[in-house]
Image (cartoon, rainbow, N blue to C red; front, side):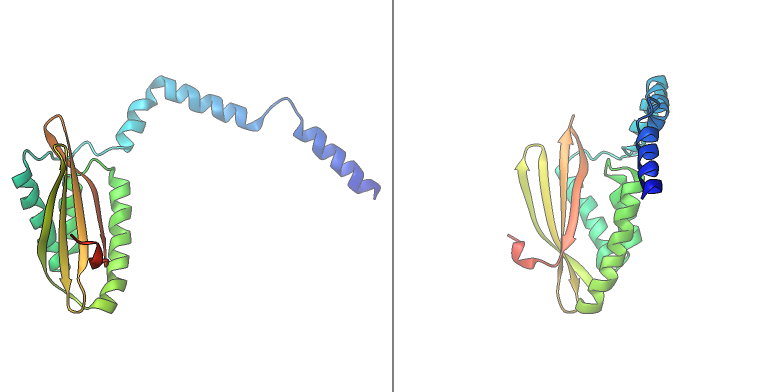
Length: 171
């Protein structure tokens, strides 16, 4: 019992040292940030190559282009288009693309292959927010795709996109 008691006291004493091992790391992080790393961090959190869209008619055209690829099962080509119009960083979009491809392959096992698409609706939620809904037609069941664009400074960007099999949510 004595060795355990001694080990406990040593552990407490070592743990109570004035020098925090994370203190140096935190100091280095703070110095790097102050030295100009803000620019690097900001670049990693956004897509500096975003293509802005001028008007809502062009928004519909861009969504149709994306859905043409989806309706053919060309998910990589669809994401190439999606990535052009979003401010989201490349790493995040790449992860979304990989997850979508995986989910779609599972979904198509159940619903059959893609066989086209249909435009469902456009809703002008506000002067700065527009929502488009489509269905990607599969042999046995459609998939609902939604695209929401946001306008700031008279430039539209793709802010949100998602898909699911919940056709009852359509207008």
